[in-house]
Image (tube, rainbow over all chains, first blue to last red; front, side, top):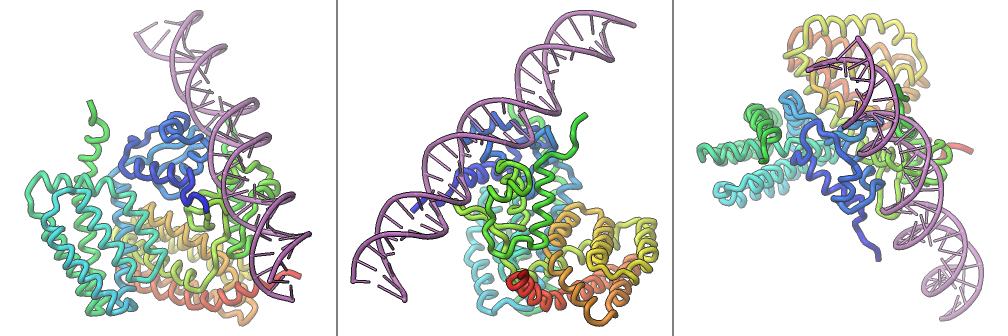
Length: 230
Length: 230
DNA sequence: GAGTTCGAAACTGCATACAGTTTTGCGGCG
DNA sequence: CGCCGCAAAACTGTATGCAGTTTCGAACTC
């Protein structure tokens, strides 16, 4: 048998994480030679991975000038959140009309089991992972793998902003997670009742609330990205 | 000054067209050496382009086995159409709430100017180009470049099926284009009236009608792809 | 004749090299 | 002091070669 994971895959995963976390600063040019040395691979597999990330919207590319980190602007983040609304609301509608009762119940159960952990967690990364997991599971109920794929991509690209947002919340008052899980519960209830409009509406307002928070988070992200170290 | 288009771009465009048109049969393995010779480029840029197409969902990839044409199944096409509903309905809603009157009027005007051409055209490729152009313009009205990007990708991946569908329509009765443009007109009217729900509903039923046709078209596509030549 | 094994051929994965382009930095000029 | 021009350095674009893996087919077994 052979190795299951190629060099390109490894490099791709590393880059994806770096790009999602803005390890490259917005608009920063990416030096292939330097990066290939850091990642322990030659430029050929590195460029293959970079090309994938361009296609996924994590990076940009200019002829004869190379790869760049995507810019970070409020309107870009807005666009991503609006796209999330589109994808997740439709996924919710589809889940209403075709998800199995057992699967809906399983999601509700998941929500219940997670609740204590969710309420007590303070680590933003952990909170975000749980939140993303819920939304991914919900998208699964739609039975549509394209919507799942798109959502996964959008989540990857808003991840950094959402983390900033969660950190901000943690550092201020502690009253955030409770409201959040109730929103999730409301969505699941709508699905369980097979009420597509209600469920989709709950999803929409849930995401739009997040989006408004995110706008503020972008400003903070800016300061973290441009002033940060030393 | 330099050449604006690199070799990779050229190869990418060629491959994208080939993939969209199923010049490779579903699940067919793609031979890099042979393909690089056909396209007049070495394997390095070819592989970079192939990687982009994998990220965009036009091809698949397996470690140590190479690139494959995506499979073609009814459920896959359904997924793409459902994703289109998600994206275009939300784009329509956004257009209602924020497009400039002038831009909406321009789209209505475009529809009017195109109508004679649309009514008289018989070439499926031409019809499809006009249809895609309308939908792309409408997405532009949303002011959301992510939705535009996703729509563009989805259109690329349903392109072949839609062509098959249009060919089928042409070969049967001639009563198709008229119904179509009226649906477009209805959507634009909804936007002009700033009636988001009506416009989105019109868009939804427009695409869902197409989707049902497409399901039948997939069956035809199968026969064309697996039995076809000689 | 169906199934198995094994070696050769074909193909992919990746490093490297070099050509062409862009960027940088320095010296001269206004 | 700033600006232009130019040459060197740095970087990207792509071809090529080789190592490792998979695929194919012929010979062999039952």
